[in-house]
Amino acid sequence: MTDQKSKISEKNTGSSFIFYGGDQEELYREAILFADSQKISKFDIVEVQPEAPEKTSKFEIRIKQIRELISGLSRTPSQGKKKLAIIHDADKMNEQAQNALLKTLEEPAKSVVIILLSSNLKLLPTIISRCQIVKFAADKDQIESNYFAELGLIKNGNIKQFFALAEKMTKDENLPEILESWLGEFSRRMIKYPSVEIVDKIKIVFEAKDRLEKSTNKKLIIENMLIKIIG
Image (cartoon, rainbow, N blue to C red):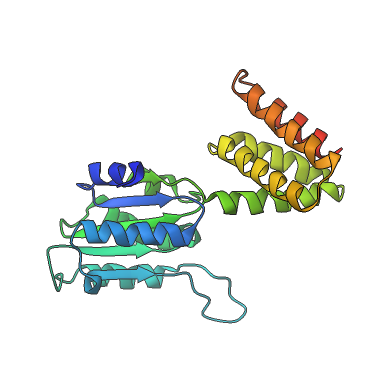
């Protein structure tokens, strides 16, 4: 059992959770593992996904879907003692849908567990306050690809993107893993396309990692690192 699963196990007396992280598929797998640990039958799992009723509509979770979910949760479990609701991409619930969910979160039935899968916690504060948040580390490959894509935009002269990337990296609690993934990427590129430029970039990232361990001014360190890499 991983440390994260241990955290969930310690909190399994709760009824409402937000599984928070970048990879929706991983969050869903963890929700199913949680259901197994609670002996919740797959027949007692109700799921909600964002949908677009019309071609011109944006994908979101609407109040009608949440009302249908609540109705389904009111029925007695077909097997075992609990029913589980999994709300995929919960950040895409519109405000009306979130407000409709609030009453159920405020007065949960003993037989009901609700798990919201969230990438960025863009939820109403009242929703967040009524749930136990379980943070999962973002996938390294996903971090690497996302940040490297943004690095490419900076190379094209997008100054706004430069500051946005520096800001996000500074606030990201997975910053050490991000820099590790960058070192891994630069090392792989070095094997394929050996060059002094890539060696220099590896040194720049190592230097930033070392400075981060000794300084609290993360933003300045990251900005300097990005300037050197781009330069």
